[in-house]
Amino acid sequence: MKNPNFKKRGFLPLSMTISEALNKARVLLSDSCPRPQLEAQLLLAYFLEKDRIYLTLHDREEIEHLEDFWRLIERRANHEPFEYIVGKVSFYDSELFIHQGVLIPRPETEILIDRVAQIIANANIKRIVEIGVGSGAISIVLARTFPHLTIIATDLYEAPLKLAQKNIDHFGIKNIQLIQSHLMDRIEGTIDLVVSNPPYIANGFALEKNVKDYEPHSALFGGEVGDELLKAIILDTQKRGIGYLACEMGYDQKEPLKSFFAQHAIESFEFYQDLAGLDRGFVVRF
Ligand SMILES: C[S@@+](CC[C@H](N)C(=O)[O-])C[C@H]1O[C@@H](n2cnc3c(N)ncnc32)[C@H](O)[C@@H]1O
Image (cartoon, rainbow, N blue to C red; front, side):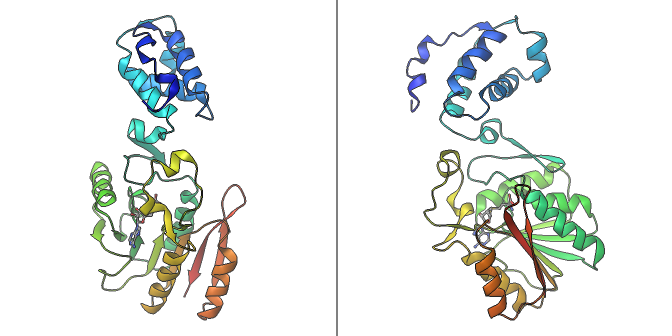
């Protein structure tokens, strides 16, 4: 038992009213969660297989067999991300399956998708590649938005590829092909656009506990400097004569990447920011 609040779990009541359970859970989550009340509600709703409104309308209802509920609360109190506990993540207009071993898609990646969608809608884009598919978040949104697009999505690791396939099957998507590959090494043929949210954090960068202890480091860390994979993707896309590249990047990588573009005679590029105003990605027109 990692969390001292749970050392005496034997004393956590196994039956109480909804309102009492919520209060107790809120207190247990207060050291580790930014929104303990909300997360207590969401976890109790998940445990009871009800929605949050039910909890408000039935706050005096007596509930029993709470052992598994306290286990969920303990996992969250130990900083495990909420999404891994419930096995689902809301992303863009979809809900995806997620589990440990695969990166939880982030809201800022929705901006990358919007950038790519603009290009696809306005240029003659038929076949694209996503490098580092993870849960499938980017490719699935694009495949559902543009059913006539062919998407080839790679990942170096089996766990994300398996989960991406599960998410693809869940939506009945037919226009994504998954390939296990380092970057685009195993891809041939004409490609019109490459999109990627690769690992771009510098090795050893101090991340928050919920990220560092639970999310796969292979999805986060991009090398000693952080931008090594981004640079490899830029060069490979240029070498293959592909027209467009859109990538997410770290908030502090704009200047080094600008110099890199200059060194490699890449002239047509644009950086974009996330909703917090931080530099977050770029689009290159080769
Ligand atoms: C930051 S995650 C992005 C996942 C997903 N596209 C998203 O936006 O949520 C990076 C992904 O790249 C994969 N990856 C890491 N190194 C790779 C490589 N050399 N070639 C292909 N994929 C790689 C990781 O396994 C991980 O799934």
